[in-house]
Amino acid sequence: MNTESRNHLTEMLHLRNGATPLAASPLSAQADTLSPSPLDAATARRLRDFMLEGAELAPVLEEHLDALQEGFVSQLERQFEKEKFAPANRLHIFLSPEDKLVVEGADDDADKVCAIFSRQPALLQRFRELARLALLAHGIAVARRAHAALEAGAEADEEPILARYHMCLKGALSHFYVR
Image 1: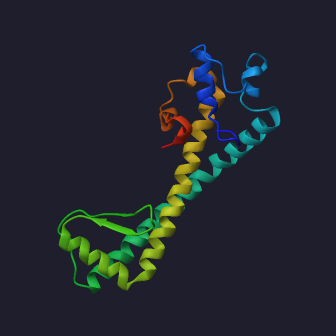
Image 2: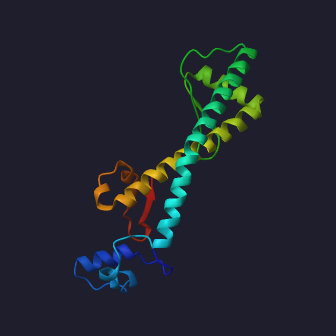
Image 3: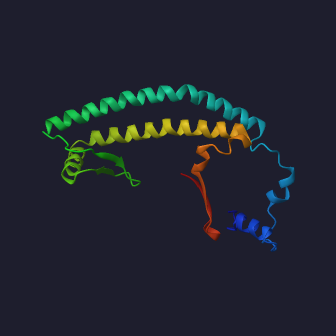
């Protein structure tokens, strides 16, 4: 969308259907003159440098995350022992989009784990830190795959990472997003 809240995609659809567009897009007028590369040379060079640093940083982050996760599990198990609690089934613990702790599993076990986390706020804080670090490490890996696909150009059209890119077509509410 542009600053006047008009959807450029709608304008392009009008062009395809032979209808008169609302206004000519400056990009559509230059479509034949655009270079095939989506990035200028300076930006492409900076991005390659960043990806090289990310390649070195990713294993360090993942190793650190593994160590922190092992420590967290040990801390949680010690707390379970203090509370004389042994989960009967598998528990799925995560943060909701509202940053609230969610525990899925047998109702009694899930309630007990929630109670333990509420009595031990440091556990919840550590879990949040682990989530942030895990997302950072994952984000670097995703960025590196996306960069490799960008560098490969047309040969990377079948790259699975590109399946994360979506467009929602809803008139003026049309938008693009990455899942």
